[in-house]
Image 1 (cartoon, rainbow over the protein chains, first blue to last red):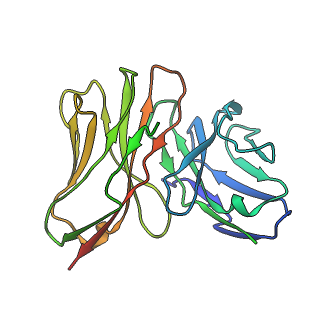
Image 2 (cartoon, one colour):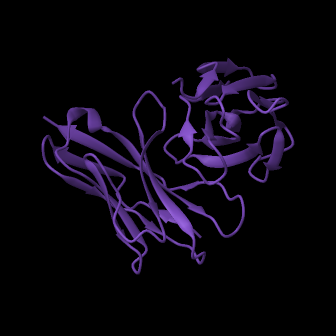
Length: 113
Length: 116
């Protein structure tokens, strides 16, 4: 079956622009996670949804970062007024339920100039 | 404090040889899971293998096996019969289960290069 998909795959933004990153989880997966991966580092947790409920947003680095999953399927990570330090790969993962193995999408590479 | 430590930034292995990638972890939670992911240059994180803290036997998945030494808090990945396609970044990750819905915590990764 189809895996996790993310769009766009690449995004270049000017500093101060708003961006929206989309994640389509595996069909039927209840849990959805967003991670940020800086160059040369492992992914770091941003936020977690169970269905449409955002249960943990402790990893969001500032109030410029906002995520939603209004119908419990597709999720969008929005970054307002982007800054250069936001440049990273943003990975989305889904799992059948909480505690199950997480399957990752290909990521969105964001470059803020 | 680092929860996951991968001390090898880079490793080289000859094709068809076996290689061990090191991972140590730190937790006081008795219930946890350890994961290994592969990240090729395309960027996608590919799940390889899982070991639960209460599992009695070491996990195996095809050419991948996990050398789980609970007392030493290590969970090394062994890749047998390396192939050129195994060249990638490899990440060890952990999730604690007794503390509620905790996210995966990743190490910094090891870059594996397989030489023909």
